[in-house]
Every structure is written in C-alpha cells, then in structure tokens.
Image (cartoon, rainbow, N blue to C red; front, side):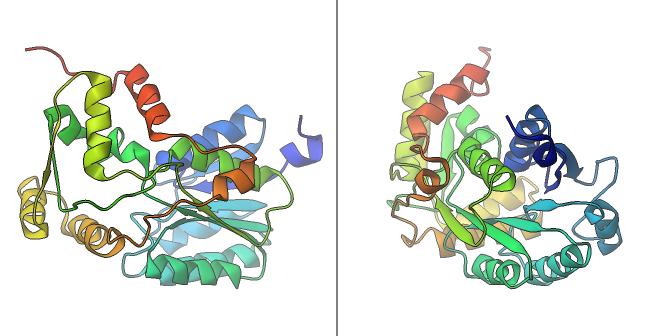
Length: 282
C-alpha cells in the first residue's frame, strides 16, 4: 500500500490515450493516484502542436510521463521537448519520465534535454512494441493474412507495452530511479517474418510475410492515404533504425522491476484472448 502522501502525488500522463499512456493511466488510477490525462480530447486539452495548451495541464503537477507524438525522430521534436521541459521546471514539476526510442539519434538528443532540464529524470528507451501487431498499423495486414514490409532478416527484441507501463509506474511511484536510463527490450530476438509466423501458428490462420522494397512500401502507404508525415516516419524507422543496431537484448526491465520481460509468445496469448485477430468467416 502506498502511504497517503504518495497517493496524493499528482501525475500528468502525456499521450494518456496512447499505447503506453493509457496503460500507465489505468494502473495509476487503480493504485489511487491523482492522474491527469494529457490529450487533445481530455477535460483540460493538451496538444503538442499548440503550446498555449501546455501550461494548464502542467500546473500543480508533481511528475510528468512524456510520450511524444508521433515520434521523437520527427523534425521539431527537440524544440518541443526543450520548451515543455523548461515550462515543467518553471511549474515546479519534480520529476520527468521520458519514453524514448531505441537506436534513434534524434531521440537521444531529446533524452539529453530531459537530463539537463534541472529536475529529477528517468529515461525509458524502448525497442519495437509487440502491440504494433495488434493495436497499430500492422493489425490490418495481419487480419488480411499478408504482411508486406521493407525489412529482411534483421532481428528485433520486441517489447510488450504492458512491461513498459509497469516500468513507468514503478519509476513514477517509487524512489531509486532518478538519473536512470532503462533500455527496455523483450527477452528474445525475432525477425518480423518470425514474429508473423508465430502469430499465424497461434491463430491457426495462414499469414504470409513478404519483404518488399522501401519504394513499394511507400507507394502502398500512399495508396491507402496514409499522411505523408507518417510515411516519412515509417520510412525513417525501417531504413535507419532497423539496420541491426538494436539486435541485442538488455536488462532494463529486470533492473527496474526485478523480473524478466514478457516473451513475444506470452504477448500473443494475451492478444489472442482479446479476439483482436479473429476474422469472421464470409
């Protein structure tokens, strides 16, 4: 049980409706913490593209969990993170926790900004999310039975968003994590093809994986009317980050939580149980 002083701590979750933010928000509320959701649809709206919305959500907060949309790699992210962290310190926020991307140079520049902000900080540097297959842009291809991506035999230590949320909550509610950089990965390296095959085996449906060129992938995204800024980001991630630089496992989850990270097979079992990959027979 948290003592009354701790549960009275006010925590702002930026991106509180996103993959990790929603999980962090739910956990903190269940634990009795005073949580403010930072999103455009919140009671007190927050919009990364409108700095006039920042002060109202930061005022009175003790800690902030920062997720930047769409990604710390996009142009302008550093300026936004710098401005937000400066304003947070002026608002006497005591702790900043940044969700960062593994292997992204631009994300590491944002990490340095948080580290130099002048308050307690913790960095959560995460690898590729397992949930991209069930809650994001790879869901429709999985349901269609054909996943075409511009990546070959490059292994990735997919990390479960639930693990990221557990680490974030631990960091936000307990002492001993200030000044720590936790690299968060799953316990096993898998190529995208191997990941897709494991999902196919678990669902009992044939799901084909096809490696295509970046040009063909961009053209396909354009055909599906994906916004150009998102196409730019996906192109960056597949061409720059998925080059083997992240093909290693880390102990960040073990260090932060004292337990092993969730295996991709465990994530699949959870996703199957939700019915997200069920396809109605025609």
